[in-house]
Image (cartoon, rainbow, N blue to C red; front, side, top):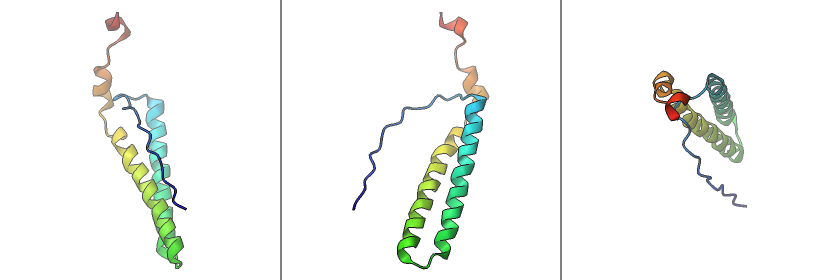
Length: 91
């Protein structure tokens, strides 16, 4: 059975993020890295080729998630916040 995933377009996130969002992203990055490491370790020890392939695939998925989250933490948030107009400048 072939299961295909539909890619839903994700809008561009804002260049500046709140402290709460930053902490959540850091947590999510840690979760993805831990999941990747666990699946990689399990795949290395698997003897059944089918299980090994499934574990490798799951590990690659978490590695992909990690790589997609990382750029959001590599933004100079102070500079991005300086470019956001204040409410008094909007009127």
